Image 1: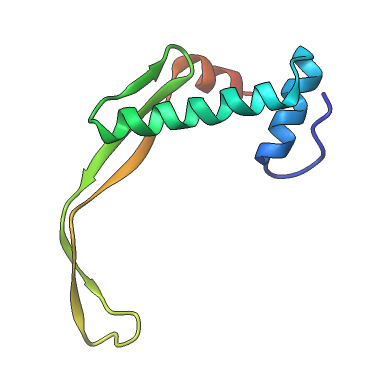
Image 2: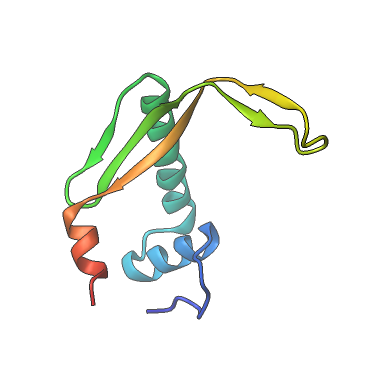
Length: 100
């Protein structure tokens, strides 16, 4: 595998790795990756979950409104509004492949 010895893989490294494994032109791989991301984002915004069997499930969860502390003035309490946050639940195959 051609992945450099890093603690993370960025998009450029991912594209290079996919190119070397598939010989599909990099611009085509980049288009597919960008559309994959856009499709997942659109599905989550519309309230859907995206499940890739064995890999995992992308979902959006509602984080309730709550009181927080103002970082500029720790004595002051502020209201933090309700918000949707992305979540990922790892699938069985992904979990098993990481066990050593």
